[in-house]
Length: 177
Image 1 (cartoon, rainbow, N blue to C red):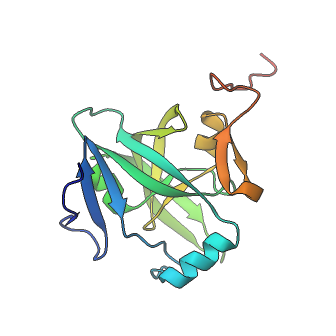
Image 2 (image 1 turned 90 degrees about the vertical axis):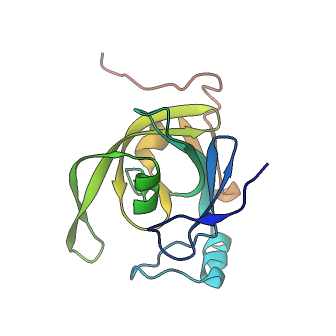
Image 3 (image 1 turned 120 degrees about the vertical axis):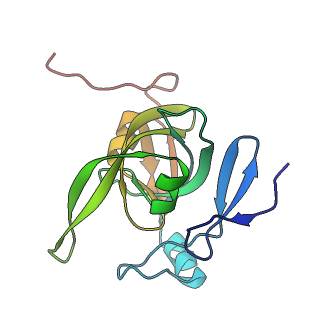
């Protein structure tokens, strides 16, 4: 049974969570545009119709089993290497700061962001544990966690699937060893 949707304290307006069976589900979220402003629903619909791929993830604090997992929709982007999470997800999962990373932005500027860990990602029965960059207001699943879980992105079908060459256990290449 899903509990009433509550706005979490300290979060931006419009970010709500519903609690059910030990998992928190984020709802009513809109991604940021290139200028950092929240996109409107029409622009999100247009982005989805232009071929963006999304996946339903379970995120958890791997160091603390007492913290609820979060079920969330992530934008899948293999041009980005890391997992990126919004501040409210880092707070909700009680993730520890483990450093700072510098990002090279498309406009040539650099920006420093927090790096947190350890976050467990679950998708399609596969898991990986890693750090995440804290930025934006939408979860972004990058190439490193996708490769770590041995998943493939099918852009034409706008979905992420298990590598058909290793359907039971994730495979990692270790050539030259």
